[in-house]
Image 1 (cartoon, helix red, strand yellow):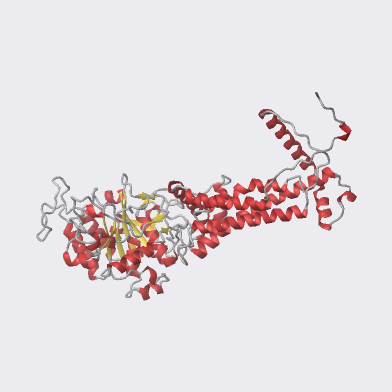
Image 2: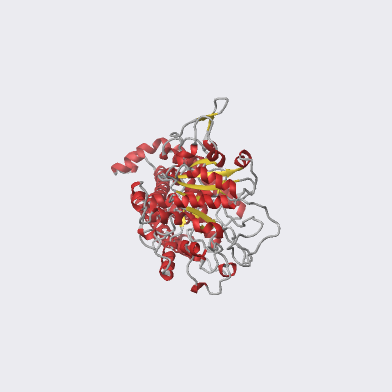
Length: 605
């Protein structure tokens, strides 16, 4: 039996549509961001951080970082051309290094870092006084010029010029035999990568205290905790350069080791006069107190260094120009491009190049004045000795040989450069900024880190976003529909076609309404009744759509300004935090953008 009803007596049912308030979308967005930070794997988080910081350095960080201490550091490279010009080969004999260092000594540098790992004596038999039971290879390159290098280092010591030399990591059965001869005249620095860190050929980070992998096995230490820290005094008193019998945790990387000397009590006054930043918190205590020294190391290591690379080129304008036989200018190490435009213009150009709008000129050289080993050894035809320009500077002596993978590619440079430059840049960051070098943690407090800044920035963006949406909806309330909406179930294809058609029609109506926008703005601003000024319901709806579209654009602009301000001003300049999370902030912020737009164009009042 079918019960009939009177159609005229039918009552309309009220359909309740549930919609989450915009405030809760912001809360959900923040909770998602916190969850991502908590559960995100390190492999993904590190990759995102590295790429974010690389893009920042390439576009903005390079132009705004001045690198004011780059002219205090010079670099000498032993390259293939130098080996050919000096009639030598690889591996270079110790006598070649000695001759280059002697020529450099005449320029009276402030300090010298040798970025080579010397291993074997290469002599027929160990000299008298060598370590008993020393392991010797059966097949090796014969080299009797080791004493030339020893005598040269003695000259540096007599003139009060400190020399720093890498101590590389070897297996347990090998010895740094040559260090037994050189240790009394040099300060050893860590020549190994950080076991806890990751290889960084992009030169984004710099381990100041690299931890040697399997140090106990490598150096035959049964109980490292009971061993004294390795230091210069212990090396020079025992004459043992093999790092056995002491804790290698006491050996730091090149940059902080050189910084210790330059900011020590004897050198501090002169360093401050040169504008270098010497902070007490970075000066290591005595290694005699092992517990205190390790505590200090842990505190400093709590702020791992992220390198700041300027995009400027080395300035050779004060150098005497050299000419070849054809009267062509000979440039020092073929690196003499001048830095173009101002920092602001370079940043704008870099951003446009990032999006493919314009071309970015290639940067092929590091920001340090560089000459080759041959140019140190010989005078130029018309400009005399270029090495004299390194007087009073810290000089870093490294190699640039084909087939040897000691290379890095910083974000501001478009080619591979020798690995010695990463030590130079780390030292420059310390001399220019002291404890204010970039890290993932602030200089003010260890809890104020990049993740906390990311959450705070996201909260600011969401607060302004939904606050702006609330003001927009109050300023231009939604217009109730003129007729009831009929729902219809359909398939996927019909839904896509119908949706695209309706959006296209709406877009064409908005385009046709463009000439009426000035009058609509006037009506809205003066608070007049739109119906009395000739605007029907459809025109009012189109005016509202344009208004909300402008709010969407304004929100994007404000969000970009907040992220930029947070990355450059708050993180980079104020807190000394490396801007590694700005891309994550943009990505997480976009999660709330669709609900935000939906709330603006909703039909309900």
